Length: 326
Ligand code: SF4
Image (cartoon, rainbow, N blue to C red; front, side, top):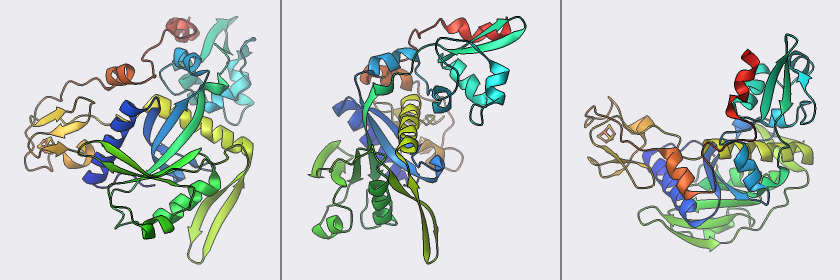
């Protein structure tokens, strides 16, 4: 899965995210690292988190990403541990991870006798998501690129309960024959936001080991066996990133022609379409007319429209992050 690399793919992806936000209870994120070995090696276009029984407990902790390395660290709930020691003894709990966990309110810090101590503010709610849906966007099936290989990799890895191909194209029997049977297929019309299920996905088993493509060279493909623990960890990482990041990851254009759709997508009145501010707008656009960015609060929209909660009270008072400086 590659970054939405044309304005049309970007507009398609955002329209699909907006549609899923409206038509499901999922938390929707886009452009997320979704490989187990090296998460950045595989980018999922869209990920849907299906909330689980502990969702409210998770939402109460923070609206940000909780680092998985903090969840798995030796910092527990009941007892304070010296920050220096726990960072020194761990290969994974770097200072930046501790800072992110403190910022998120998942770790609290405290100073005693000149030393800084850490503790978890609450137990991590393991069952906060019930499933993950990974969606590959390919608006034009006439330019499939590496689509078949990507989808086969997704199925053999089994990181998502469901893998979906979303397209704007008319889907033929020949198209369906080129992709694994487990992959569901949606036809999505970005103009009117209508989604037609061409084929249901066959749920994948995420609990066991999987096979991941790690490198491709001429005449040789390297794969790695991924055990179930590594996979579970990667699933939590993807879910946390989707929760913290969401899909409105762009700044609206600072242009007099810019506006926003009611669901917060960047719209250009001059060209009468949704645009990709990072690629289409700015000095390179012949119609660019410097102006104020449209006043849109993406977090407010997300809070109103999804189970994600903006700035929850947290499980400790927010000021706890300041304790370390006392
Ligand atoms: S920079 Fe160009 S594409 Fe972007 S909003 Fe302005 S006129 Fe439209």
